[in-house]
Length: 476
Image (cartoon, rainbow, N blue to C red; front, top):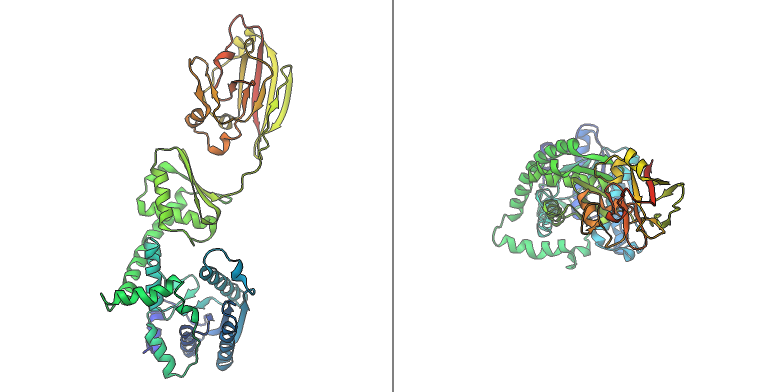
């Protein structure tokens, strides 16, 4: 049977309460929360606690849900405590995609956090017990979770406390009967469509046939994992602060530096980055971590993984980018016909980039006098490039345009043609920039790839007569 002394031992062990704490007690009307309320109420004078009762009506069980709320209100009146309640919208679950159980939990926790903030409560007491811990452990095990998931329900997390976490369901029911405390039974707890219910009614009894103390064993295992996870998490935070480049809706790491870290730290840093973007790790499984490791260790220089809730991980050469995936804006970079006489104009190629293009007729002497070889690099890195083109054997008109699938160029001094795709990889140009990379072309061939090379067919010779000078500048 639960005793006040046992609950107080748990509270002291995990430092759950201090003198003069303001505690919001979450009461559903079920056995666990009713026992929790009675026990915390008995301790309130010793700890000088100020208590409130909070109840969230999920509206999932019609009149049954309303009767839960009625009982909790009556308990509040019995203990002379302020009762705070809220209700979900009717039939909200009919529009829900994914797990109704998960969404209900999310709505409940949002209500509790919002209420605690409003009344300035520094603790929120929840009724999770030992069996809840075991069930969560097995759920996460079946989902392929790592040590963090298997550490299950912590006794204390932020302002949430769980004084019954070391108490069995049988002890709770016995306590309620001895003290004649009313409680409600949620019939959905017997619905075998829910994984947690199948684990409770089928898997745990089967495991008890191998180890009658399986619940206690799982509890101890979860506690060991939680302590080790805390140590690793602290080291991961230090590494994250050192390596992470934080931008709006984006976290960037150097792949080279990331790979120097031990794998357990790598995995935790990734989780910290994902949590930074989406604020939590819900629906992120160990399978997603394995996908990331495969991408990171692959020979491919670039790639991406789509995670739940529009989070995306990208590998782009030495960069690892974790960001919120946004719909790609419609390209502003269109085919633009060039005026081959003296000409200057600013053009928008994307939301973030504009270019200034300058064209003027030239001659071989001017080329010899002004030409300086440049290092091959992306125009997005150098921000400018210039070229002299011999158009004697090039058909007009010329165009400024973005790359097309299958585009090739015959770089100067090369016999064969080379795919732009391979050149972009060689120059380590991110995928997003490849789509808007400026190209000078005729109707049939690419004449100049800024930052890389002009075409062999546009090479200047002393007898070239039709010579054009072009320069491109990226504008801020």
